[in-house]
Amino acid sequence: MTPLKALILAGGFATRLRPLSCTRPKTLFPIVNKPLLQWIFERLANNGVDEAILAVNALTQFYIRQYRPPKCGLKVRFSIDPPKMPLGTAGPIKKAEKLIGHEEPFIVLNGDIFADISYRELLDTHRKSGALATIALCKVEEPSCFGVAELVNGNRIKRFIEKPAKGEAPSNLINAGAYVLSPEVFDYIPEGRAVSIEREVFPKLAEEGKLFGLCVNGLWMDIGKPQEYLDTNKIILDSLANRVKLEKPKNFELKKPVALDNGVSVDDKSIIGPYAILGKNVKVGKNVQICNSVIFPDAEIDDFAIINGAIVGEGARIGKHVKLGKGCIVGDQAKIKDGIHLHDGFAVCPAKEVTENILKPKIDC
Ligand code: GDD
Ligand code: MG
Image (cartoon, rainbow, N blue to C red; front, side, top):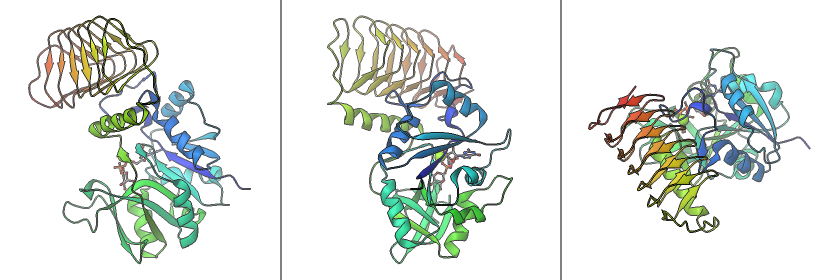
C-alpha cells in the first residue's frame, strides 16, 4: 500500500512567538513541556499517517535534529528551503514534490497551529468530492486576519480570499491551516520562487470548481499569538490534570493544575499555580508567586517575584521583587533587574536587560 504522507510547513519553527525566541534556542517550542512538533507527530500517527516531511529552513532543521523529538512511529524527512530564499506557503510543497510523489493525495499542515482535526475525515471528504484540494475550515468571530472561504452547495469553495479587509470577508469560515491536496496541485505551483498557496493557488482552484472545504468544530488555536499560546497551555493542562500525579511539596505550595518538568527547584513559601507551567531546570526562589504563566527551560525567578499571565523565555533571569503583568513576554536570555515592574502586555526582546520600570505597554527591543 502507498504510504500516507504529510508535509509540515514550519518555516519559522524555532522562532515562533517573536520576540520570545533567540536565535539559538536549546529546546523546541513547547506546549505543556512537550514540543509542539511531538504533539503534531502524535496526531499524525493516530490518523494513520506513515511519513512526515518537514519543510523548514536549514537552521530549523539543525535544531530539530539536535533535539530529536520522538517520531511516534513516523518516518521523518526534511525538505529544506534554499538559503536566504523563503518559498512561502506553496513553494515548499513544490520543492518536496519528489519526496511526496504522485501516487496519492497527501496532507499539508501549517506548523503554528494546535488543533483537534481528524485528518482521516479530511481525507475521506477529499476522496468523496473529487476535489484537488480540501481545506479544513473553522468558524471565528473576526476572519480578516485569516484566509476566508465562501461555500456553495454544501462543501465546494466558490471563493477564497486571503486576509480580506475588515468587514469585507464573505463568511466567518477560515482556513484552519490543514489541507489534503491531490498530486495534480503540483502543476499549479510555479517552480523556483516564493509562492503563496492562499493567494495564488487556492483562488485559482476555487475558480475552476476544484476547491472544497470541511468544517471542523474541535479545538483550534493559532499558537503564534501569545494569548492563544497561553490559552492552549491552559486547555491542555486541564485535560491532563487527572492524569498527572504530583507529590505535595513540603516547603512550597502547588495550586493545581500545574506542570513541573524535570530538574525544577522551588524555594520556601513560593506559590506555584494555578495554571503555571515550569520547563526543565527552572529555578524559583523564595516567596515567589507564579500563575497563569509559562516559564521556559533554564529560566531563573528570584525571591518575591510575582508573575501572572506572562511568558518567560528560555534562560531568562527575573530579579527579586519583579512584577510581570498580564500578557508580558520576556524573551530568551533577557534579564529583568530587581524591583522592576513591567506593564501588562509588555514584551522584552531576547537577551535584553531591563533596568527601569515600564508602565506603558510596548515592545522593548
Ligand atoms: N518552509 C517554509 N518556508 N514555511 C513557511 C514559509 C516559508 O517560506 N512561509 C511560511 N511558512 C509556514 C509558517 O511557518 C506557518 O507554519 C505556515 O507556513 C503559514 O504561514 P504564516 O506566516 O503563519 O501564515 P498566517 O498565519 O499569516 O496565515 C496562514 O495561516 C492561517 C491560519 O492560522 C494562512 O494559511 C491563512 O489562510 C490561515 O487562515
Ligand atoms: Mg500563522
